[in-house]
Image (tube, rainbow, N blue to C red; front, side, top):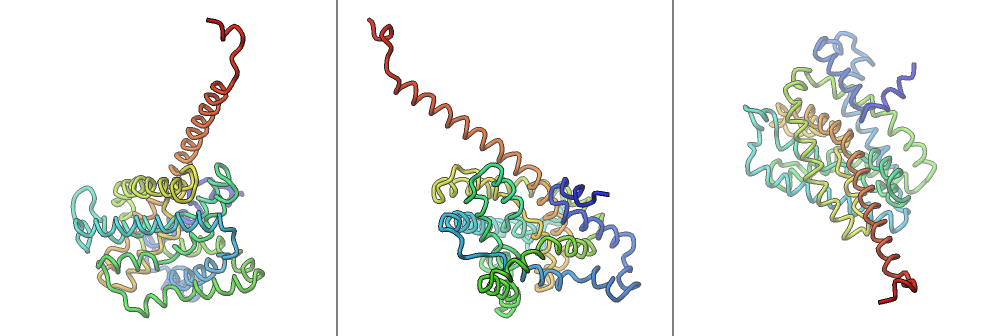
Length: 338
């Protein structure tokens, strides 16, 4: 059986399929972890320790010795994505209650879901799309996007907008594993390679653990708001990212559009933040389901939209070249006659 190839054909499948399996376990056998105990219970309930190791390994993958072009492109996309998420959170806080929308078509939508879906780009998706449609430097621009990994950026945005208050020790605890991995990876390239190989294998494990905190009924009821949220991520973050890529990073906008996605790892952030802020705990199941849906929607649409953007851009450039050649061509003798 080619299970891995089947997962690869599903957008975000390495994360989303284990998450759905975990949700099935939680829905139909909610006491399975306690029943089996030991290591099985650890896999079912071990979201935080598994993510701690994953954040450490993600930090180790960042190489500050990348070229200036890569750092410029990556820094532009990172700063734009964070700024847009902060503005959107600030606006949403004026209209959406802290405890989320309770009734109606968008029941379950919360500021927690909006922030965590918008502030983190799917780096793997971005790299894959730009390897096909961009330059080598653009493909390597995901080097700083790992900074978005984990709950730190979401915590900063929620704290800066007054939606939540985090004690300084919680900020330190959220970023410390990442910083240690970052330091070790830059001190020793062999360690970067060693820990970097662990990033992808850990994804299905924390996906399964996350799913064990979600009831399938929540996924069903949160489906439509999650789809709308995913479309909102592409539109609301995509337009500023395209403009920043063109005006600041010197690109044609394709890299910005390719970065307008929701990362699979963002699915973990509502649960982590809910553990820190008890008032957010009731929002976690719906927020997790919506972010997972947004991840799936953006994973499907972003590559398609980027391909269309690149083709349109190339067609326009080709037309300009044809016009320039036509204008520069010398007049033939019969064309010069009056």
